[in-house]
Amino acid sequence: MKKVAIIMGSDSDLPVVEKAAAKLAEFDVPIEVHVFSAHRTPDQARDFARSARANGFGAIIAAAGMAAHLAGAIAANTILPVVGIPLKSKSLDGVDALLSTVQMPSGIPVATVGIDGAVNAALLCVQMLALSDEALADKLAAARAAETEKVLAKNAAVEARFNH
Ligand code: RP5
Image (cartoon, rainbow, N blue to C red; front, side):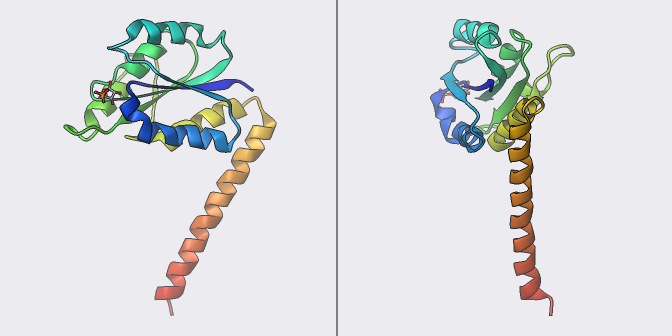
């Protein structure tokens, strides 16, 4: 199976980003995790992106806060699909990172999830890999069904309490 790379701009991003790692682990998707910054370590970010496809990756998650150029900078240097996670920070609640990540120029897409949307970023990558992996597709379908059952159980509890 191809690997998923999780790149974050700073180790201070880990509390959110590790939720993506945990979700990918649930599906037994192999990952690599790195701290590369578009601004502080641009050479390392570029070199990683340029070699990622040849190194066995199928998708890249890039998470950053503030003036979040990391996902775009990674996407500029690879034809692999890049999923961007804009991260919440103190000053602007993540809207700065959201706009920096999502508003890519035509030709260099970044599939941007919601602010701090690490779980959805991971699930998108699993869905991409599942396009060519039937066993993974079956796991996704089972996980979706299990989530549905959880919500139905919550609904049953609420209905039992209020509807007589
Ligand atoms: C961004 O700046 C990082 O992704 C992080 O969200 C933010 C702050 O980084 P630190 O100052 O905590 O290292 O590049």
